[in-house]
View 1: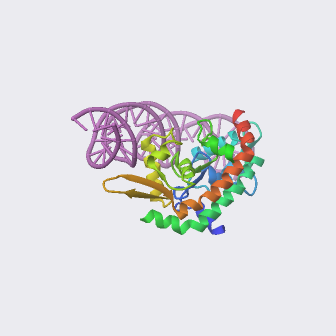
View 2 (view 1 turned 180 degrees about the vertical axis):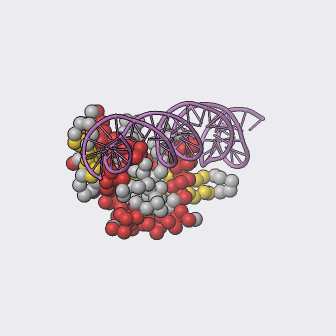
View 3 (view 1 turned 90 degrees about the horizontal axis):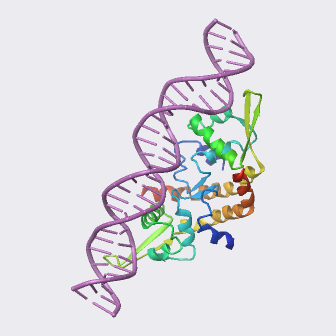
Length: 117
Length: 117
DNA sequence: CTTCACGGTATCCAATCGGTAACCGGGTCG
DNA sequence: CGACCCGGTTACCGATTGGATACCGTGAAG
């Protein structure tokens, strides 16, 4: 699990190879995982998600918010600080996501084999 | 579950609303579910998947085959009859898919609520 | 006064996705 | 012979996706 979690943020770890996609955009799944351990600021998310442009990160967060998986909290007007955290609904996604991750871990080699031929 | 399964083939049932997507193309998930109960011919798949053009169905099946989830069997040369069935790997997907479906069933109302506002 | 951090936007563009519609070659049925 | 079924393929096209790059307003720090 830990190994896989690390891999997920690498370029080799393919959302492409993975037959499950979470959310509608490419990065939503990773964003959710980054929020697993509590609220994060925009700039904090950009560290593990270095491959994601700020445009795409914003977009992912916006749709996740619209769909009720993430709550955006803004401190100060104008914007001084913003945090994102999973809602209850968002948190409930972690269960099925875990199932999916375990599946992937188990069948990783078969996935790679199939792709090679 | 049964209710949901029926819904999945309707236009309203949104792969769009569902935060999980199986496979890379729009229809892969439904194709897999159509193969759950055993081998099916191309034309048999087209019945439940009436909304899917033959082009897209072929494409889905081809990538599912390439990725090792589906086995294509051709009888006769030239083509007299073709069947598609899940491989072991493909069949193993059904577990996580079930988890995802249960999640969706449970949170369906919340999903709809979130989208409305 | 300048510079930096923060949380984004705006613009442009190439590639991909997916839908429509037409077509196709071989076999079979009447 | 003609029509139809099977399992696709091909061409075309508009919409969507996502990457690159530049930019921006505010407030705090030096």
